[in-house]
Image (tube, rainbow, N blue to C red; front, side):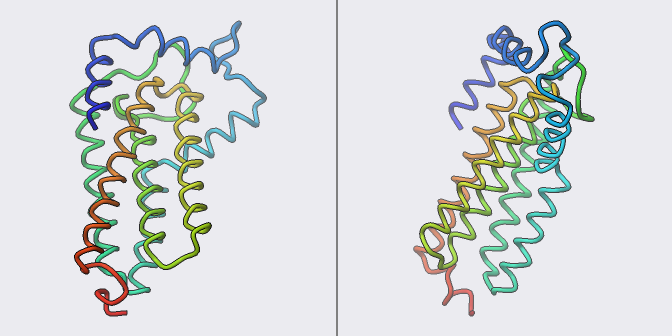
Length: 210
């Protein structure tokens, strides 16, 4: 969280402008900044990937996992998931409307946007949702390699979604980095709460009345 605050201060004072522009333009054809690098199918794939970090998809994924946890009678774990995601979304929108950093204007946007730029909501919320889900599912008795697989998938999705936002020209790289920092930090905090509740015996197979 401290790194996020430090980064936000540097961004607000324009300290990352040159680096942001350089990285953003590296995803574009030198002779035509309106054209992202790679064939057209790559651009279409990036739109598909970015959709995995949209509000609708994240709410849908959260709902699926909530229902699963409730069906398995992990009611308190389900409540923790709901509170973590809902509070994270509130923080994301509050920061966006509070900081109001303009979206990149160097290149055409490859995706529709309707909020300000910092931090990236897609980057933050995908990190928060997917890592929190991975942690909560790992709470259920599973083999170690299955738990590792959950976190691998969460990492892959989070990184891919963040890169897609830069590729499509809708976020500065530091927007994405800030989103990652805040989202992962929020997920880690949630998983610390989960561990504490397990230690206290408030969350677990016995305490959930399975």
